[in-house]
Length: 273
Length: 306
Image (cartoon, rainbow over all chains, first blue to last red; front, side, top):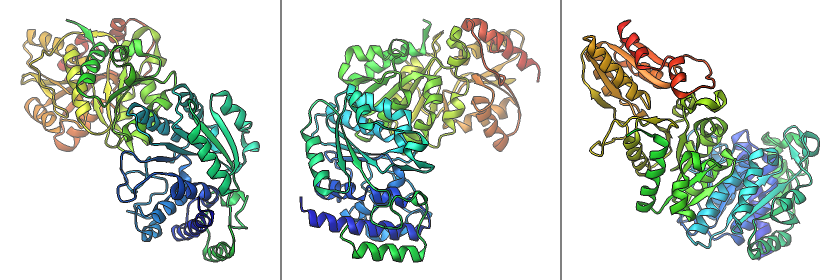
């Protein structure tokens, strides 16, 4: 892992996210910024994908179950070369290949359509089951949101993954602690997440989701784990990288105006994030 | 020989599984009732029991489909379309994934279990999803061929199956064609357009009408979506009187679909036989059909009341 390279990439991704959202005039900055480092490490260091052949059948797969963080994934896919970066300007606009929430039919490199919370883990399980059936070596990653754990289907899927011993599946929880109506612990507490997943038969790893070494180590540990699905609980900061967005509830689902955009970009460019 | 379409489904799956290695089957703890246990016995590696988790089952099927599998996700119709509606819409319909939803125990003839288990809105729910194909076979042979046709068609397909044994209408010479209606009998006086288990009942009604000198055309609409518009218009032109018959709410099902076609293309009077926008109740299938006005006699009465 080249940490400096990845840090630079993540910074560029964050700048793209801010620009995209400002251009679109709507979208979800908080949850996009919180998972930017994880997606950067996955796509630029860990995942085996071919941007010139997005449907390559042996590729590693990623399901963004918290589909509202689409801008982060779009920025990563564009940076990786799945489609021209010019397209990022069209986010959420009529006819765009970048829908408000991920649509696999529209965007090259997207492995699953998501947006309605609670469904991504099941889809990832399906991909992992197919991988086992076909004796393929690919791995499946799924990014879960913390508020999303309140959906019952997550727990149905958690049982399925453990029951079928899907050790080719790694779920990463982007645990930023905030959902639309407030902190998780006030809206409906999801803790203890670690013990819950362990009780469901998962191997659980807990990390700082903005520490590249820890992300790297956790993914390697997941790859080495046998007989169980793996959950990486990544503690993150909603709005990470933009001081006035960090841990601010209001930045769950609103786009920056021109002034806020400039301020955010200035901060990101000058930062060591 | 009378056979439930769910029985034919189980047999067809086994046959299909041998021909197409990409076929996988999922069930939600009802494999003995949906008859997917037949497939499990022969192909245990390609069968996934998801437990009592219909929402998870539908999206797992979607994930399998993204990897080139042809999943048949099976459960009772009410759970497939009701419990997991949003999963079917957003994770199967919207991405247009190659998932087949095989829904057994449809309609009120599931019987004694009562209203919670009787799906009378499933056709309506499924045909409202863009790109979803909706098939409601009438007997065992049609089910067999519909399952093969569904596997060959790329995209989401809903197949409605029943619990109760139904008479044989088709033999092996029958050629099922997706999206096409079938004229079972020609007659100039009235057209009876039926689907699913009501096809056999429509034939019985046509026999009785004949005894009274009324010649009925009987049409089997096994594919409710995309519907065979040309055939519906043709029989409406020929007879000027149309009756629809379905084991479903009269709102949103076959009757509605036929009325949509005719009101735009060739308006004639339509009488709809179906459940009259009320919930069912416990009872034997036969009693329920009678109670809710789904018998040959009810069709005959409708034919004579134009």
